[in-house]
Image 1 (cartoon, rainbow, N blue to C red):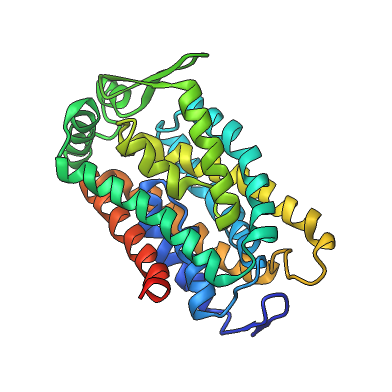
Image 2: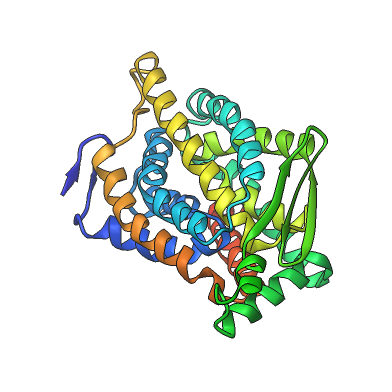
Length: 313
């Protein structure tokens, strides 16, 4: 099958199957999988124009809603955190889209940028895991996983209450919520500024920001991985809608470049991702938190290394 915008010719079964495999694993950590699909499109399919970033965001729009609904159903959506993420990443992703088209249209320069960002995020998360920092997040994660393993995900009033995010509050200075008997607080302005910066990077890279924000929330702010996944995915969904719209809006100003998304290719990736993210969100609670974090480290560092190796070696 030939996809006209990207110039890619591949079996129609390949995009959904690849997206399913990637998204099932990464969605457990609050990551849609778009950051892995982009190097697949560039390196394997040969799709290297700025339109690949917009196509990646089409994937997010189609794939993410099922997973978000699953986290909402299970009561693990931190709505105040989601609002901060959207408020910060939304303007940032629009700036990032302009940077991608104007300053990083060359694939080699773009890969260097993307590789450096991913290497830092993966390295920081690995450092935190090696230090084996405990604290409230680790305690809540361990207790929640034991509850799930014992079959207590919703049986009994106490189990149902503990398994959900409660007392979530958005404040001008601090945002707080409770999970499994532990209280977590984050600086509202700090997370907003971080989301703004991540949004700009995500707009360049063609993701919604979850691939960067989820590890940051876990490694820097000490939030339980079981509670950040829903917020990261929801933020990615909203910003991807804005990103696709913005790429379409600026496409006429860059007639020499393919800027608007390849919709048929993005939709095929999205269909596979839709199933993968839903099943990943459903299975997440059965996987130990440390395993999810190490999984994120491995995939992030692997992609970063694949980008940087030919450029630096």
